[in-house]
Length: 434
Figure 1 (cartoon, rainbow, N blue to C red):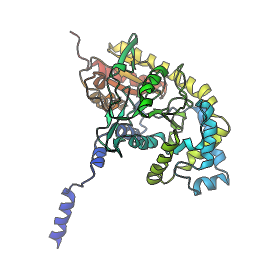
Figure 2 (tube, rainbow, N blue to C red):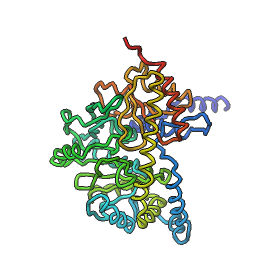
Figure 3 (cartoon, one colour):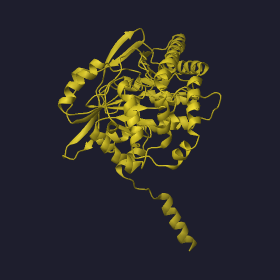
């Protein structure tokens, strides 16, 4: 009897669980999982330098606004409804109508509640939107997701249920000054064959690049003819937090699906995203949301109601968030430039036109960026390896192995220590010039 139990136990320990192909792919190391687990494993040790994540900075003026908003939610009868009632899958009609009325002038287009959907974060929304337009289609075709300008957001890559659905080509690399560059759309390689949807973040995570309206409109001349939608992720863009520098704002119009987020205004823990799209897409998203989420969470919706009714977000974005992050970007550029120059590091930095990040290239690095990530982690410096940000790029492009992303949302002393450690590690692993 004992022998039988031991035999059964040994079988359990050695037998591998069989999963679906999709689950098996998800179980492999992913960029977004690695990034978020690094955040979750932070111990608070004084020597930890957390430059890897996308967490917004803790800005006291913004937090005071959120504290006041949160206090209003703690009063009956609001609290009873917030905690005790379900929303509809993509939000109740009254809240969606409020959002449509409020966002229409900000997005320079008149739309209705039927054009609005709420989700538990824009990441959640994109998992539906990308799969809605890619993979095996009802007509028997197989459609792909085109990323017009890579590098692109790390969180898109593993969202598709179908495999091999991403398409991308090397961008044009434009030198903008000493040790500075930016990426631009390569119009000569733009091809919509077998494409079901385009996905763009503006400003782009990881580089801070802001796609020009001219390039967007150039692409739309082709996508409109072929009825291919464009998903535009505005997590860092207009109308809030509006971290797009001097670049013009995106407006809503037919053929575009816009996603907005509360995360980068300073509320990542609320997990609240808004999608603006055509009526048919929103109706389909409601089916997705009902099956996967049952209902959107209440906290973000109820906070939205107060923030929209009191018209808080435009002033918050213009007077607090944008000046803060512009100053942070300038500070980070100075600190990292000084550290690199001191150590003789060869480097290039993408122009930080918006967002929270510096995208840095080390052209003479003798190790891969992924190896650099691990060396930095050994020193308690957390960064993100750039190789994760090129889904669908199957051609040689040196930047894929030479770039890293880091956030400049941290305190000055943390940025300074991170710059010093990174410069020392890179300097010791640079290929020597002949």
